[in-house]
Image (cartoon, rainbow, N blue to C red; front, side):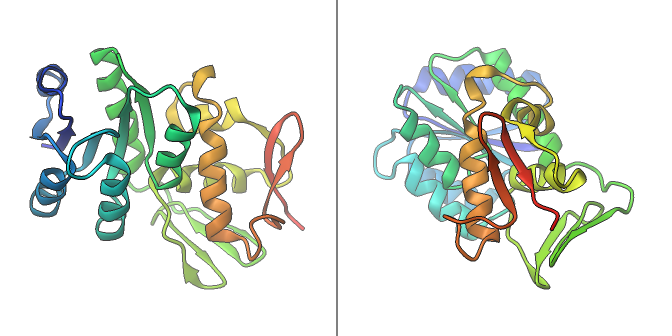
Length: 227
């Protein structure tokens, strides 16, 4: 049974999320602050964390920094009551896979959890290796390397890179890429792709400000250069 860690200092949100997730067949762990969540994550190794950004003792951003350093494969969905875009973007840049803004629909939360876990724990795909210059991606093993050095990618980053490498030179819109990684495109979330692309560039590019691999197509989105 897959384990979900729900972290929020609002008890009612924890109760509702736990109820819906347990009905969906998940084992649910809970924590009310970042320090407690880090302890639970270290000992229970959850498959996914549903995480509030604003918490006592250790906020969600610091938790994300620490848990990503220790468990790079863990999936994270952020919850935030803030409306400022930069708060959401910062969380995504730290490695969160998705976010939801409070108040949220519990049914949508379950759907998002399922979608993120499908990406993170999909069965190995048929052997397929994509290579552009010194960038190599093995879809079956879910491994990516650059100049023979392994890239530490989140599940979302891996799927974005796989989509771009599948059609080098093609301009992908943000909606195209969002549908690829989430299975559905929500217009309000299209800009989250920018944060994931920024993360990928920092991992791929010698100079992220002047990208050689993933370039911006003005007014459209992004493409992977094939020359």
